[in-house]
Length: 166
Figure 1 (tube, one colour):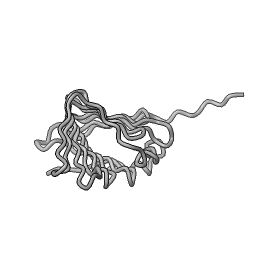
Figure 2 (cartoon, one colour; figure 1 turned 120 degrees about the vertical axis):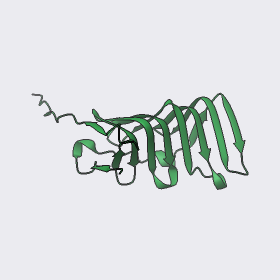
Figure 3 (cartoon, helix red, strand yellow; figure 1 turned 45 degrees about the vertical axis):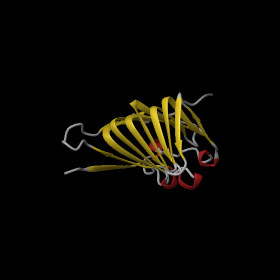
Figure 4 (cartoon, rainbow, N blue to C red; figure 1 turned 180 degrees about the vertical axis):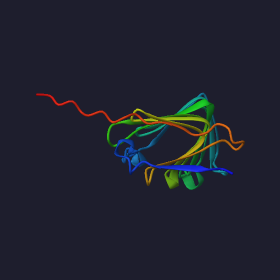
C-alpha cells in the first residue's frame, strides 16, 4: 500500500514554495550536444549535456524530451544520473532538486521527481523515491518506493529569530 504524505507548504510560512510568477511568460532556451525533432509527432529529443531554461527555471540532464503538439510545450522529461532542477521563487529564494527522472507538465504547473529524489528549499530538505510538486497550490507530496523501502525523509530547520540592528 502506497502512503502519500502531504506537506502543505502554504500552511508553514517558512516553507512557502512560490515559483517566480514571471517564468511562464519567458521564452524557452535549450542547449544540447544533439537534437532530434519530429514535428509530426510534436516531439523533440535533446541529448548530451542538456540545459533547458525558462526564466529562472532550469533543467539539466543527460537527455531531455519535450512534447510540443501544436507548437506548445506540454511536457518535458529529463533523465540523468541525476537530472537537476532549480527555480527562483518570488521571495528570492531558490528551490533545487535532483532525481533520476524529472517530469514537468507545463500546462498543469506540475513537477514529478522520480527515483533518488532530493529537494532543497529554504534550508529544508526532502528525500524520497517519488515526489509531486504542484506550482499552482504550492504543495509537495512524497511517496516511499513501491517495494516499501526508501521511506520519505524530511529535515526541517528551526526558525531563527532575526537579529535586530541598532
